Length: 67
Image (cartoon, rainbow, N blue to C red):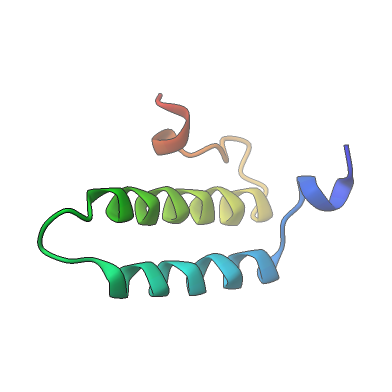
């Protein structure tokens, strides 16, 4: 596997932050649960990346793994 894919960096986090901001502007009071789920998934992925970058051996996020 390509090492770059294994070690996402700050550019990846910045991209995810932009996507979250875009999605947050699309949330309405009703019928946008799927958007809220997407936002939570992207936030969990950002937590994973930051933990990985900090060398945390338990960098997998519980939200994404279901543990």
